[in-house]
Image (tube, rainbow, N blue to C red):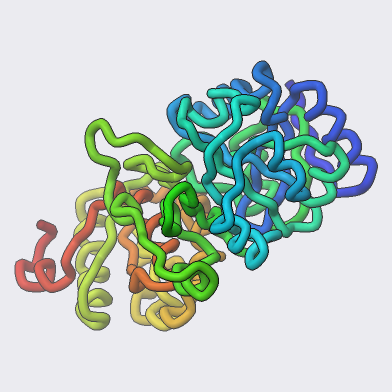
Length: 354
């Protein structure tokens, strides 16, 4: 199969809409990451997403719409969800609601709920409007790999697997949408993103955060949202998170990187802008300012992909406080590292890796 990459012209969007209507797959930009779309109500089209991504079938998909009236065919909307839609749609918020049986089990992974979103990216909006179909679309990457925030990332993963990629430039947010469960009396965050807990609480009152946000799924625990698997968003190299006091972390990164190189690895660090110069001998990759988690979120997936391009096999990363958008950053970093964490103080005390 030949994969075309086309700019988001009206002609390209019309071609994409026709492909989707015929049951084909199309990758397109959203404000968060690029999505890999199929007609959500076409039971023959949706399995193509799982095949192209190599995605486990027990991982639910998000259905994208361009107007709220489309929800009539998808789910049962309650007043709590309506509050969030009024405040955050269009935008990077996915809402989980009781499904209608028109939605195939392949979209919901057999759950009684469906995840729905109305994106704010102008290209996504125009495509969804042009085809006028609900589009199931996870991130347009091979399963488990860092999500794509540029069309070139999609092409790296999907060349020969899908017919068309719509190039809408780099994504603004850089991490996937916030996913919230609105089936109960209180909003529960299943996957953090650009819409933070504080923002949600201003609209809907007290909000809970699922325990699985900063830990792996437990044995027998179902993935109620995309992005909940144990290792996700990961480069080919082994990622370890280095935690502790700022000066200890910088010193530990130097030691860890040197020891890894002495053991024959291609090692590097993912560090804050403020520490790049101090870590200049550790192949530093600047992930943004320590005081701006939004910048870290925007750069994160592109950085992880560049590490693969450079064949780095051991990666040590700084961490941000899990607050605001920082919670989304740590959710992605934690899964990229399979929750492998190193205490800087212990490294310095022992003078070696644990």
